[in-house]
Amino acid sequence: MHRLSITVFSAFIAFIMPGHAQTAVHTAKADSLMGEYRFEEALGCLEDMAAAATDSADLAVLQGKILRCRNAIALAEFVSSPKTVAAENFHKDSFFLYLPLAERSWRICPNSLVQNRREDFPSAFYHRDGDDIIVFTDKTGNGQWGLFSTERLNDTLWTYPSSVDEGAFSSGNVLFPMLSPDGKSLYFASDGLYGMGGYDLYVSHRDGKTGKWGVPENLGFPYSSPFNDILFAISENGKYCMTVSDRASDGGHGTGDSVRVYVMEYEPLAIKRKIQDPAELKAAASLEPATSATAAVKENPVQTGKGMEKYSAVLKEIRSLRDSLSKIESGLKTMREKYAASSADENMQASIRSGIEASEAAMVQLRAESDRLNAELAAIEMDFLANGVVIDPDKALENIGNKGTGQQVVSEGFVFEKHRPGRDFEIMVEKPVKQFDYSFQILPVGRFAEDNRLPDGLIYQIQIFASAAPAGVKDLGGLSPVFMRNPSKGKYIYSVGVFETYDQARSNLGKVRSRGFGSAFINAFYDGEKISVAEGREMEHKGVPSEYMVCILSPDGSLDETASEIIKAGTSMDIIRTLNENGTVYMVGPFKTKAEAEKLAGKLIAADVKGISVEKQE
Image 1 (tube, rainbow, N blue to C red):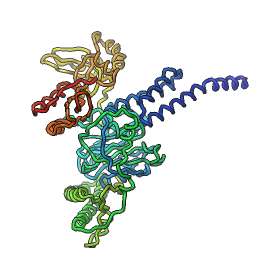
Image 2 (image 1 turned 120 degrees about the vertical axis):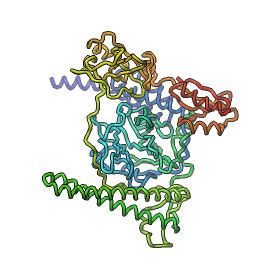
Image 3 (image 1 turned 45 degrees about the vertical axis):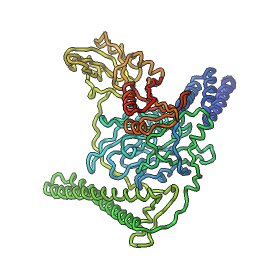
Image 4 (image 1 turned 135 degrees about the horizontal axis):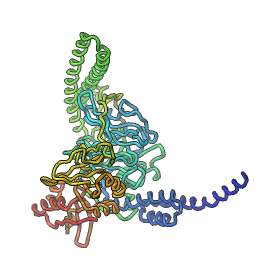
């Protein structure tokens, strides 16, 4: 019996191996083509394999690669051309310390905020002393690395960490979230959103009115690539942006233990273009500087000057203040513990409370002075950077009191300087507040949604009834969450659920009708506005809704200065440069509605800019 089993099993292996082996060979070929940016060829290869696939596991892998190929082809329509000033390889465990960012601002994990440690990449997040928000990654309930944030409530207390708009960011793992210097944009890497590589780079913009983060957008070529692109950030002075990637590993620059840091001149409103030629696209995505990175990293001459003496003196004051703040914080912690333990002794509590209040007042004054000195230090550093001077803080401190022999590091190009990580990180967070559950439920007693605003993007709801007067909980049939819309006086519309797909809504429609709402039906919404269900399903099928672009035809190939100023002042949209039979066309967008596009077009026309049109993009 055992011999027969072994014979049958061996025959089964011999039968299935050729198919799997063939799939592996063709998949490797497709991966190689993608690495050469030959996405059309890779797509054809993968689609042929998918058509012939009989194994469901193989088919799932192939479909994932097909989607990445199609995404890459779409993203090749909008390629930026930043100027790279330097590129260098660093070990992946410490590369973040070499980025041109603030000193002592990388916080190593685990710490009081993040107890978990990553296995694939360094466990660290970026937070400058004095910032009022921290965005970081941590493990979620499903074991993935999600995006979280906490905000300062006062000098000592922070909000309980919460997931950053889970619906938009929850797919896959997230790496190295970085806020823009103005705090209005969030950059991060993810392996689970619309992309073409292992990890792609994304940006989300914060709504100034609601405080919510918008739907993430892929940064596209050349920042994202078919490889692992793990970090994007903008320097404090807005002069540089930087990308970290393993894309150069196969090109002879990196190894399995290293990543390459690319530093570029930052352009807030970059003009983008379409690149179809694979070799040209690969060259654009290489991000290598015009001169070698070796030339950009060099020894610098020693110079002296009053600027360096001032910098050293301010830096010494700041570090002295930090030491004082650290001692006071330690003392406050001890006093609070004693206060909690002395609840039975009112006199002792009064004495300790007086000490706590005095220490807190001192901290406020010291922080204000620290903020002033940091602003002064930043101004000095900006002057140095404007003149190509890079400073080593340790050497600056060594030279205090040695007038005429102080050192400042001068470079005509860019110099990678290793920074020190931040001090041991400890914060106090408030007790967690139970969040309202917006998942569809049938409960003993129905519940109204705490917030009637609908999330951005495409969602479906089930409308249960309309009435001339506001309804009560008893009218909800145990459904939750129920949203109310009041489109006109004397009309109240009630709908249940927030469903991401039509199929999710349809699968729950019968349950809703069984609760006494026999005429319930499905509605679709996009960015909070009602659309037809047919439009919603078409969006699901296509993946994106119709969009609008403002087009400026330029027969001589240049973009009018007046037009450029109006665009910069009125929008942060991309500018794409294309060619047609009539000349060069600059396209601004995409806008979600025709009205938004026409608003910008109207401003351009009013300024007498010629060749303006609004075009729909499917």
